[in-house]
Length: 93
Image 1: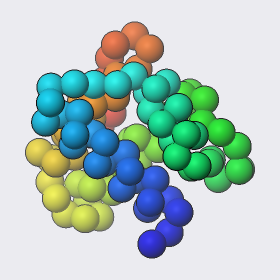
Image 2 (image 1 turned 90 degrees about the horizontal axis):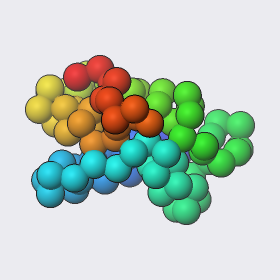
Image 3 (image 1 turned 45 degrees about the vertical axis):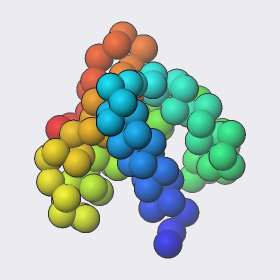
Image 4 (image 1 turned 90 degrees about the vertical axis):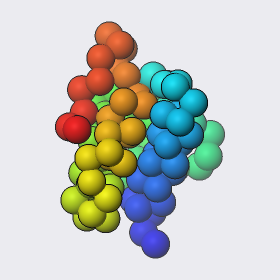
């Protein structure tokens, strides 16, 4: 499994847990989770919860829905798990 797919799998599994318990975590906290668990950006840096982290969440939604073929319901749990700083859910559903 590629490092990118490991990150996506981590984000997806955490989203499923959060969604099943009616919880969310801000994307900035997701960045902290990723960093704490040894994940790095493609440039080998820590995540900061900015544009790169948002892009990774969006790519995870698309990966689960389109590449794994698991549909809107499964990818929707990712979309609704990680609000941005304004409390919005900007990810493709």
